[in-house]
Length: 201
Image 1 (spheres, helix red, strand yellow):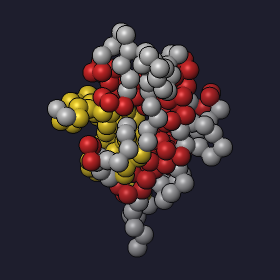
Image 2 (cartoon, rainbow, N blue to C red):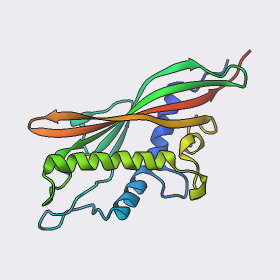
Image 3 (cartoon, rainbow, N blue to C red):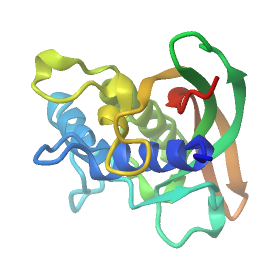
């Protein structure tokens, strides 16, 4: 009896898509962040006067959990499996839609202040830019010359390869995180990923 791919394959496909991107392409999440910095004239460091706005690359991708303030590098993304909605296409091959949550954890200390923004404002702005980058990578299409974000690069290089039908962002919210000594914001992005499973009559 063949074992279904399930949540483990989906979580790995999402990590592979965001962190490793497409073979021979710069379309990783950090590559898209570089594009966002260029498009909006944002630096990835501060000048001696601290006036620059920063949008740091994602330093770590954590499958299954979000370590929050207990991580070792910031900002980071946790890829959490939330559940699945059951079989939804029994006639043309089994499809299961899995629900995932991406938690982008951004301590206010990792983004610079500027003359126009205090530390909290800078963190809120950075979180909105991370959301912009996630939307950009998931919504890109074949006209860009890369695989479509809607299918996680056709499932990536793991056991989901060739079996992801669709991956969409279903919503996003911001939450206050950390503690008074180390305040942070968390961007919580909800995903729905539909994967084909072996059909058995």
